[in-house]
Amino acid sequence: MTYAGPGEETSPVGRTGGLPLNSGDFSWPTCATCKGPMQFLAQLPLDDLGRYADRGEVGGRGMLAVFMCQNDPGMCEEWDPTAGGNAAYVFPGEELPSPVSAPEGGETKLGEVSVFGYERVDSDDYYEASTGWAKRTGRPQREALGQLGGEPSWLQGEETPDCPSCGRLMDLAMQLEEGRHHETSANFGGGGCGYAFVCEDCAKAAFLWQS
Image (cartoon, rainbow, N blue to C red; front, side):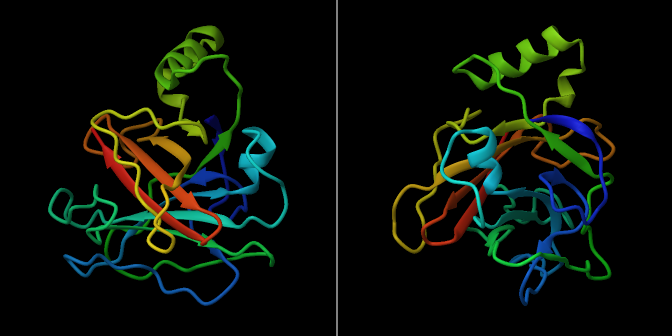
């Protein structure tokens, strides 16, 4: 996943920043520790897994949305998939989604919207692929925003979450870098990566980060 330019904060594409899209009733998530509203990090149309990662069919697979508390970084266990400091959802894809307004107060949005571009790189290793892409294209390394699907490239130990409904290991939907500019990027501990997983059969999602 590469930086494809700025985008509208309500665009129905894969992106970091902006506002989430949801076709039904939705309450903006709050942190279990500080009780403040979480920051919206990213969304991914799950159809993109079929379009660009050869994983499944295309059509109505829904939208993955990821949130994380940034009201008191480091104090709310926002790196953990089950501690209540972050939240991830699979929103149904049958209807045209509508933007969800951010609540007042707290850290709710990133400093910019960055649209995902997708480029295939012939490598089994994510970091080799991202550094090779930067060298080949002459673009900054920070414009490699992550990977779509595939296997997670862990910075620490393996932490693939189980689906809370069926108990099976979840599938990686995307691995995220912090972003292309430190003033507007996500906070994964300084140089870390975020990992968003889904169980599409159960319409469940989970998020964690490592640094």
